[in-house]
Image 1: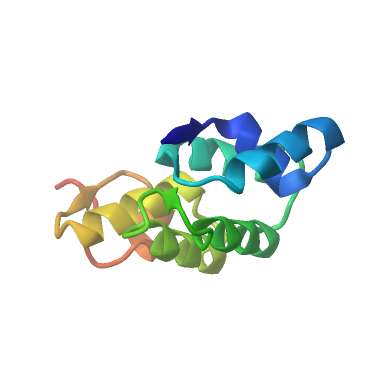
Image 2: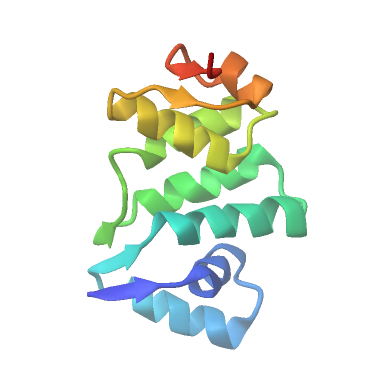
Length: 128
């Protein structure tokens, strides 16, 4: 199995460097492959903060990525993370991931982040 870093994922999304994008297309055409949550988080950060993409576009790109046959990723978490990220515009992708992960695993998420407490779900709490 192959594992892809953030640059590979960004070339796949952006198709901005034709010679590299073609190589990426060949990699994606030969599954299986793995993309870590850290790589996905970094790609979201670059698209949002570095390139100014809006959340809807990023969510659509992520949904397309997650749907690729042969991709191994945290597919038990990522669809919910993408939905929350798209809906809660004041939460970062990492905050959304943390809230969803805690919810999926049935744990409480403690934070001092008031936006996350208010929007992350009933399982997101402030320490007492």
